[in-house]
Amino acid sequence: MAGMLADKSIVVTGGATGIGRATALRCAAEGAALTIADVNAEAAVALCEEIVAGGGRAHFVATDVTDAAQVQAMVASAVAAYGRLDGAFNNAGIEGRFVSILKMTEDEYDRTVNVDLKGVWLCVKYQVEQMIKQESAGSIVSTASVAGLVGSRGGSAYCAAKHGVVGLTKSVSLEYARKGIRVNAVCPGVILTPMVERLTGDTGVSYESLVAQEPVGRLGEPREIGEAVVWLLSDLSSFVTGIAMPVDGGYTAL
Image (cartoon, rainbow, N blue to C red; front, side, top):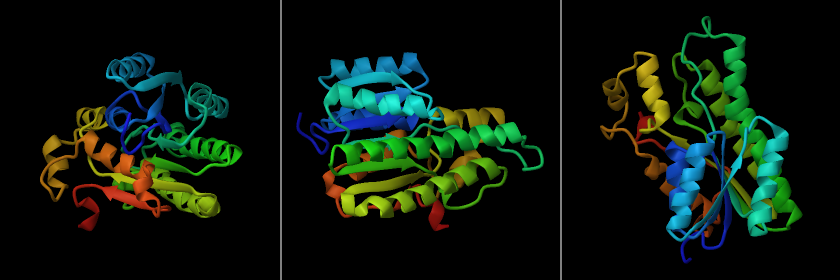
């Protein structure tokens, strides 16, 4: 299949819903062979079936990104299926609970940071390891957030984790730049995903207040993040590494 990612083996974590799902569909449309990793087996399998029905290649591997053995198995599954690993979109994440630091429990903090930062760290570690082993270039993209660039009231754990993803991205990009392994992050603004639906439903934050934060006057759509990720995974961005790209409707320009 022709396209920007033709015949590239790409892993997408958190691929079952939201940004991950939209990005996986865009990757498939551009010719990628996909490994969809998630804890939501039902939705991930349905996505793989949809991609295959459309003439693409995709398979599912159950993965908790906080577990090193499962992350290693995820990478091995991609290599077993397609012979190599060319790229990855490390998107698995949770929002945690947005409350004052005084009200947040240590367990809540640990859970958010383990999924959103340690999970990305493990994925990048074993993806880079495989690319070095196969002696090839590659492109790794991780999901940070505008909360990785600015602060957010009540977001001490989430912001700490997402700022960590930005720092991780910059550091690893420098370590492996001369190996041809590019490491970047995308920083979505407020996007219409199940995560945002939970935020507006559980915390009393209104949809209107979220829209008001976006200079473009609307929330983003998952496919708009997917377009940026596909470009970063493709050879069209061959001179781009170590960036944290806002895809935020102007949020961070305020």
